Amino acid sequence: MKIDLTVTVTEEIRKLMEDMTATAQIPPYIQFGHLGTHFDVMDKKFPLENTERRGILFDVSHVKEREIEAGDINIDKITEHDFVIFYTGCLKEKKFATPEYLQTHLELSNGLITDLINKKVSMIGIDFPGIRKPAEHPQADQYCADHGIFVIENLANLDVLLAAVKGQAFLLHTYPVNYEGLTGLPCRVVAEVE
Image: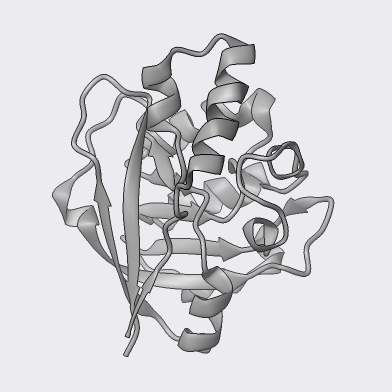
């Protein structure tokens, strides 16, 4: 069974993003790169090996209004090159690109990010806007990128994936748009579950 984990970009979402970038005076090419499910490139090239990775999903939906810590997951389940996903329920509860969604208080702790780097994962996936709050977002993504890890934001349908995998590993396919010069790349992420 295949499960699409990509946000469907509707006209309403496109308009919300357009309005948001217009008020912040963000150029359209920046907006395009960060539309829907995407990862922040952080001056790195996406290796083709990352198009297919073993996935592991952690249900951290019980965490509200605080950082997600290493103690909230079983880090021993993670192996080198994994695509580690955190399900919080944020995208399911709040509409993508709305102020409520963008102002979520969820983030990964610096300690958890360092633990994931030490595990040498390939990718980190989340169903909220960034692994750290806006003031630390670029630095956290750059820290990961400098260690060969890409952060994919705004993953959808993680509740469906959670029910299907029942704690087991699965296969993830990730295909970014092949553009140069963008700070973010939209991508299609599909889970393959036996």
